[in-house]
Length: 265
Image 1 (cartoon, rainbow, N blue to C red):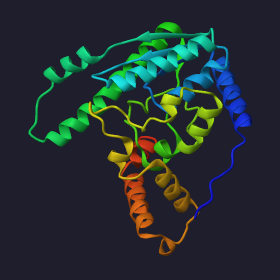
Image 2 (image 1 turned 180 degrees about the vertical axis):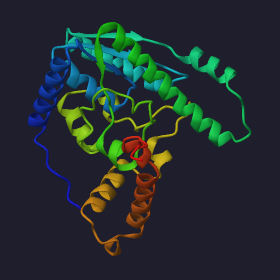
Image 3 (image 1 turned 135 degrees about the vertical axis):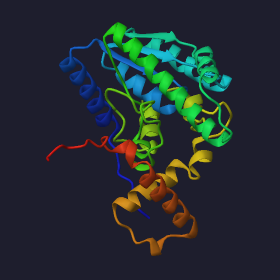
Image 4 (image 1 turned 120 degrees about the vertical axis):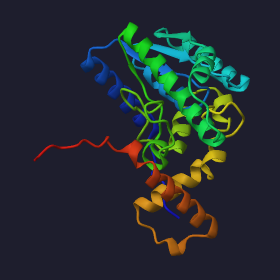
């Protein structure tokens, strides 16, 4: 079994907050804007941003959102505002924008492709909205992706939730984000909720989409990085490892810089 690293949570907390504050001050901006989904990643990221003392705008951007996701997001925002006077919030209900978009684009008979494209459209509408708030308030868009999502399986939308100015938790595995979330005292309802991107308008979880849990994918990422012999894996580990390798390969276009045609003729 590949061993996980041991974090000194308090030091990690301080390091990220100092990094955020330094980056913002060097960029000569007023603070940060974060999309709040009701999940652990956005809750942890927004709390870290709040700890800088700089302006933080938490934005809800529902698009046919499940009530449970909305209530968790609102619970977190209220808690954050009570704890930090530098935190404000805004709501941009994008449901009608999304429905108008659907009416204006051509239809196709491939339902699975349409549903995936529309799911990614939701994320890209939210990215556009966050940059609107960033522009009018002089803020940086803080990303909420973690290490296994951003650099392991590429579980995010290119130019959607992947379109950000900086990524404060992208060197933390999902399990480490939960550790930090517990330390930061984010709401228990968020810590115990099943992770979901909420992009399909139903109750499917991240595990449903990925075919493996985050703990399993972390194991696979560590096993791959440490070049563990696949012959030592159990049958389930072999399956998870294959899932990880496939997703990692297929989503390299998200993780790597876009190709540039170099003119040397």
